Length: 258
Figure 1 (cartoon, rainbow, N blue to C red):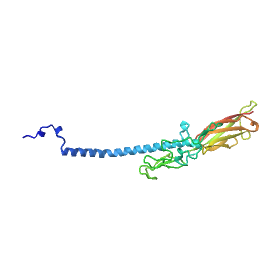
Figure 2 (cartoon, one colour; figure 1 turned 180 degrees about the horizontal axis):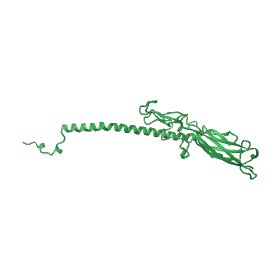
Figure 3 (cartoon, one colour; figure 1 turned 120 degrees about the horizontal axis):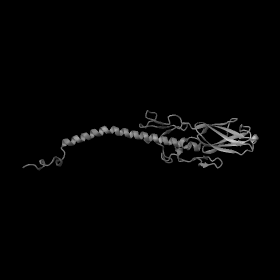
Figure 4 (tube, helix red, strand yellow; figure 1 turned 90 degrees about the vertical axis):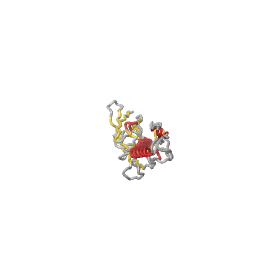
């Protein structure tokens, strides 16, 4: 008597043991070949995520000058002591615009809410807390091996971040006699610049005999005030707002002789 399964088509009889073993071996070989690619892809994604997080933190600290934004530094007048300060308002004066200056001073955060919640650790893509230098603003990730000071560390920025600049102000006086404008010196004008000092407005008398100078001002908005003296006493006080950038910023203001 003939067996019925011999006459059935191959597709209906299933796979032989040898065929199954061969298929499993092929799948294993393919998986082994693709595994390194998958690991490299995952590591590349983690590296990119860490770099992105660090760049976001740098913008939060010092803003983006191209967008007229100076972040925590511009509002508070200094870099944060710790990364937690970017999102934690504890002990910091609230941001407010000075009515006379038109310039705001104080904490206007949170500055990096997408990176960490208030009180939360600021970590890289491998959940290791970032190291932060409050003087240079440099951030360091321990990288894939979770160990600092090894070859796979990530550092942003590559050089210390410049956080200040210099200001040079020239004051031109317009004599009430109709004579040509004249450059004023300390005998005829005092020039003040207001900056944020830990989030509080701080005004200082600018140095120099004219032009007037102030060095190492923090990046961001500052308020100028020129007050006449001597033959310019009683002149209307002139106010101006200047943005300090890295390097030297030059500004000219005009004072009318009364």
